[in-house]
Amino acid sequence: MANACPAIKYRTATEIFPDTLAAEQLGALRADLESYPGVRQVAKRQKATGTWGGNLLGVSPNKSAGIKDVGTVHQFLRLTELGLTPESRPLRLASRLLFRLVSRDDDSKLLFEYQKYGAAEPGMEPWVRGIIREAAAAALAQSSLGDDPRVRGAAHRIANLISQFLRSDLVRSPFQRRDRTWLLDPRAHPPTIFSVALLAHLPAVQRERAGLVERLGTYLASAAPKRQFAVACGRKLLKPTFLLFGDPLHVGASGITKDLPFGIYWMELLARLGVLQGSASAARLWTRLQKECDGAGVWHPKNLRTIPKRGTPWSYHYFPLEHESKRPEYRQADVTFRMALIARLAGWELTAT
Image 1 (tube, rainbow, N blue to C red):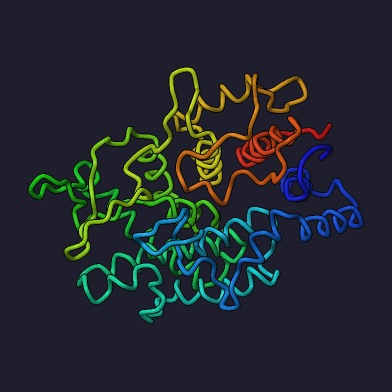
Image 2 (cartoon, rainbow, N blue to C red; image 1 turned 45 degrees about the vertical axis):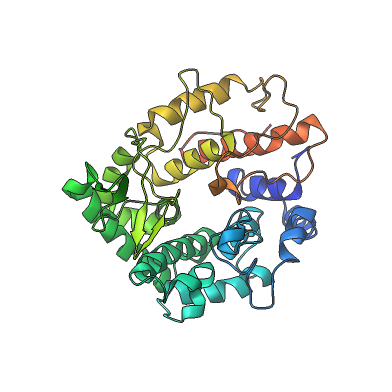
């Protein structure tokens, strides 16, 4: 609260230690949050249609795919992580589009960056629309719109596909060999980073699908295959990185990971699902992070000269929330906040000091 940005301060006061600040103090934090450069920089790039970048799932520029900027789903999630509510103008505009995507609107324009493949690649559109629907539903659920029946309905349909996959023989061998390429079996519907996030932010669905959550937790704690593969969509071969075939967290025996932002993001998702304790890799990373905390509980590793860099794109919206990194305290704030939030989600007793 002394050294972090307005987004971290506000979320600390509302999610980790609720009811500790007076309404006036929360109002002041809220005002600081809405004028925070990290929020304004994202909001000002939004178009009048509620979209960003002319694409949905892009996280980094890709000329061949026509992606010039971060896409709508990830910018929507970014503003959500920064503390904006669904009532804010940027999220309100974007949620209209996301609800259309969740509701199976078959308008070809809603394929966005995949639109050019629609007519040229028969068989591609259903798979692409399914992934887009998962990503849109996850974004809406994370922004506290998960009680909407459209989001809950999409969550149950997605949960059914994952459940069928986890119960089938495909879970042991989800690939087929074609020439020199391994392809995902078209009958396989493994979990994705989007579907896991969707379920993680819907506690009511978790209670209704407790058996699935338990099986999913076991699956996500298992070793992931290292095989390179592609997804056949018509004649087009895609190489998605958001499909999950086990534990995506790479942590050494000493608890070191090359992608700390994703590691923390993944631990938070597992904590929200209630399956954090079943992950051996998460346990190693958590032990390492605890050792790097000082006596006050502040993450304080040696030689921290910059904010940890992302290795994979899927934590773009999540880390860092801090816009300023010149002072050492600012570099520590994000991880300290996330550790406290994960501990709270896991049921730990926390004390404000």
